[in-house]
Image 1 (cartoon, rainbow, N blue to C red):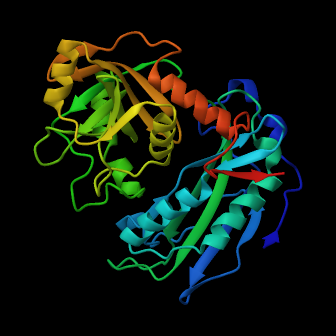
Image 2 (image 1 turned 135 degrees about the horizontal axis):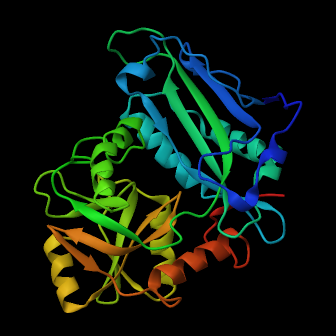
Length: 349
């Protein structure tokens, strides 16, 4: 893999004590093109702007897919890229759904490893912070007719990010607009899923809510996702979450939390969660926690859920709350405090 290092690093410009999500980008990026039916040699080059022909297909017809990952500073100074194989599998499924070329696993794995090695100084030491990793592929063929592209560009860039949603948030159940429908692309991390969610989220924020709880497209009776995260609830002392489907993202953080919850002795259920069940659980006091789970936030605790005109408040959370216990266990594995019996960590010396 060819590497062209920067002459002057921008690392000194970063204030790691006041990080903002998405503000800083590390010195290098990986670039690899697909043409004539095969992937070309990947290169790691200085981070810079991309040059696009105005007829580039990705700009017109939505063939763009990304993945979200993190690398963590471990307590012994080494760096851990978390669950790289699981993220690659999801990346490949998303690309397949969008009829796009899939980068080989070795380019994905080696590219991430070499890129993080090169920019290891950008991995934060602050608790909860991480180096966010953004692999993405876009259709790079310049031809404005509606068609499946025959050329693609694979890029990975990185940047240090803080912990998100450190305080519980307010969410509104959305029963008018739709994030995804069965048979669609809801399970894929493609750009259109996110762009379509902006407007209803904007409306919810104007009413004082940070995010929306999406419901099913057919009847608006069942919870699907929380913003761009998987939705999880503690009902009758059980950790409950909607099952993944072609309208719900197969979250890596979701999978990790469910695995750890079971190992810690919590009962878990993957099943449909109806709005009527949530309302009844609020009335009976059996709904004790609600939170979103995703790569960016890890865990986003929810304090208020607005359902059909009524705000329902969750109890005050403590260090014994289920989401805090399993999040702490996850962080201990990622940072090397606890052993990684699951083989999740890809450790860079």
